[in-house]
Image (cartoon, rainbow, N blue to C red; front, top):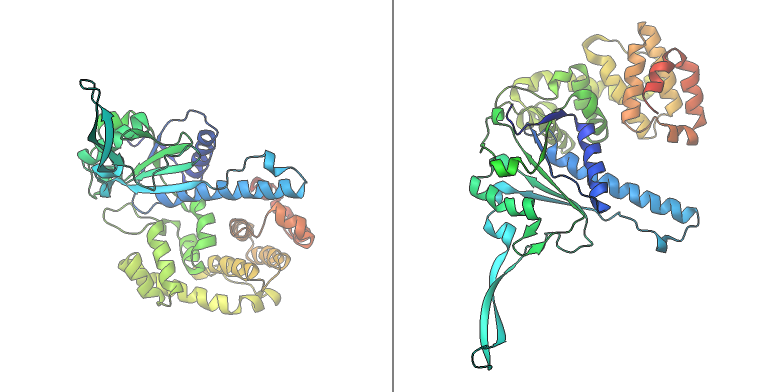
Length: 391
């Protein structure tokens, strides 16, 4: 680990930290620039974009609540237009941070003759996407720092030190975030300049399945979620030049949604070495998904062999989200399924997947008291663990 890597942080902590710092910066408070190193495809950029989006949604929801409460929203300020500005330093040059020069013609008074004469000077036209106006707020994400050559890094230095683009200041409500890969990732890597290191608070982003699951269960194909639940080491590889990482699985999911078979989807997006295993497992998920509604209603339980129990938890969650099953039915089935195996561990698996899929929460219970009754009736033996889920 290099001096630039900094303190280790997980995906959820990363997102919450960015949201906190962004809100403080938006409120006009002084906040340090922050830098995150991490393996390729781990989510440095996408999670930062999510942070801005979530704050926008929270602000929009606050506005709706104030309207419903009869408040005068004209007297309130709602920050639901936050921007995420993603800038790759590896693709930047002098004009990125200074603008394109142009000649301006002016008329000036000659101090010697007191006559007006024509003259000209050079100024710079800043990029349109740069947040120069004071009313703009959000995150300026300086990506690929360690893929940028020293000259490109120096171009960013004035922005970090003075928050200026040539002679124009960027908005004080913009949080500057840097990101880059690590030396051990064996990609193109350039050491960071000392003056840049000292202008960031530094963190290293790492991930695990527990923290990645909420995003996956809402955005990634259920067969992939089942596969990684079966063996969490499939989420990301620490091997050099191994492309197994969250971004690769997202591409695999897109391949599946586009109609590619499981093997081709995995081999082309993730890792050909595990493509056959994944395809065999995913085919099993497909079989489970086809009759999961019938099996739940008839209380025909799944076995724990070959990862069937892991696939079934995602299949049931998908059926509930699609409106094919009621949440109460899913909870009852999960409890009786766990009882048939003789382990509450599998009930917790089902409920965790339901929670991460946003179909099990206190808000849901307010609208669906039947689901809460089912949870209380069938999951009573696990209530201590359930309480720890902060539903």
